[in-house]
Image (cartoon, rainbow, N blue to C red; front, side, top):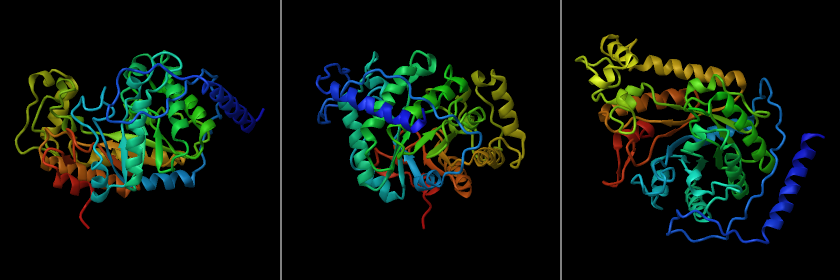
Length: 409
């Protein structure tokens, strides 16, 4: 049986099941809600269904003009981080406000990326129904983004359980995305779907390639119009792309990667990380005028000790906190994408506020210029928290960072 008939039969069967499901009211909802959001019509329970047949991946996907146009359209973006990907919005000090959207657009950004922790707002047992009030909150974000002429990328962020037990959460992951795609498939194509942020740990390349293929097959059976944004394993970095298997025919896909190198600079003083980032005062570009010794806990790690030795001694041209490693990394990812005929998106990059502002501006400017010189759209991490380009307390942009991202005309 050909793929078009399979997809048609599968979609017809889903419509019949959903029609039957509408005769029942769904009464099971998680406790966590957002009280300020009006309650929508309850979302129907999704009944279990077999995984759609995959389209066999092609060895060399054909360069898809639509996907490249969609990638270019993303332009300059910013992540609305620390809000909807917190266990509950506001728990990490960030609540999305209506005034943020026109503010972002007026500053010159084209796109918002919205990290979302769907996994804490859905049933843990089949049919894995997403809380209608949380869905309504996401609706509100999408509507405000689109109303302000911003492209909107929604993803699945911080699904911690799937990183530890990918096989146990496979069915739930696909069911969550089935609900998301079904709800938003009639929205404009300036809404993009990013299945998962930074796969890592037990969700290694082999398991992620398999899960990604089944997720894309399900999504494409429901919706071929919206662009999917896919990443590799190993925390979504460039290294993860080396083992990535492109699902299906490669059409209407964008490949995303994140960039935070050198990590000991961009994450210095990060409270959520380990002792390796405990040394403050790392500048960019290196070398420093006076050698910087790592804190004892960091120096105990061999790779950190080696990095600081090179940072303190190597010339600007060869320094690990310099332009050369960034150029080499971007050259590698561009070569990888060109070989496969796929467009790229730099979905995250940024330097934490514990670094000095001038170094943050230097690094951000350089990474942004390197991406743009290669035709890569980007989204800075992030809007108004620890990496923030906007100071919410002072209600003003951090001008140096903003100009590093959006140069004055």
